[in-house]
Image (cartoon, rainbow, N blue to C red; front, side):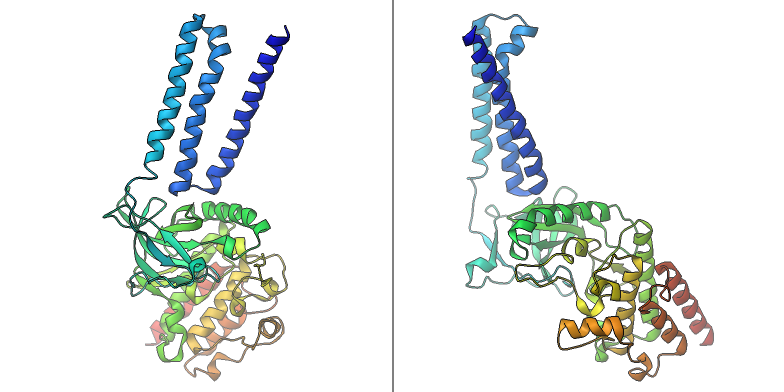
Length: 418
């Protein structure tokens, strides 16, 4: 009787072990989706699955299928042999066909801002080993990140490098933004931030609008989190915020109106951008404007880095954002107003020697009239800018859609006057 009790207690403990393994696997699969780490985890779980089947053969088959003891023993041996073969032959893929790695330099500050214009070859690694991420490829193949082939480096976002990639399954070009949270945030926060980041990316991926960049996939490989998104041939608005490269005012109005329409669509789906700035707005060769990096700031701007610095782009923050208040779509409208001001003047409306000075101006100081720096700016443009950058929410545009309406109306009137 005691021997029988011990047997069943052992079976229960084995079952508890497998249940715990399944729980850990579910969490690990979410954390390391895509890439070699994810494949290795799947392989180990498949190995444990066959072991589990061999362990339950004793009582499972005895209860459901009355088999002889020798037959059950043979089944158990076969299942364990299959488990060993799965682990051995599956593991061989991780140790065969390796070649010299391609090293890609990583530099991180704040996600967003990488330009996709004028692609450049991957830069050579610097001497500091801790500043290098190694992406390996089999002999004769391009380096991989997750399931994506890395073709070339496009630029540097503030939290990582932006690559031009290809999805071999769909034969589709993608832009891949990388980020390593462990280098930017305290270890105690990394898991929570990653979860938040992946949740936000999944929500944003459901957005479908001509003025919003489409997100195809989110994953992790080589300790890098990455976003695979629509590949765009164009350049961000940074270039057009300098006095020597200013766009015609009529063109600026059209650009901002398109951004408004993209933001309005996102706001109506309860998604706030939180980091509207020139670097996150792409202008295509055909004139279409697309907003990038929706939702990414939500996972990072409210959190402090290892050095205790609050992440974000202070020049484009709204007054409520600098005060740590709850944000709405009107915060994005204020940030877009700052971008609009910069596009038509080549200057920032709020500036200072440090973050505290900038935040004070945003919260308390009215900017100079844009006509001071660009006499071509008419009263109607100034009125739209004043309402977009109103410090009071009651005086600011209630929606990006309403601001778009005013911009489109102004654009039509300017065409009629020609």
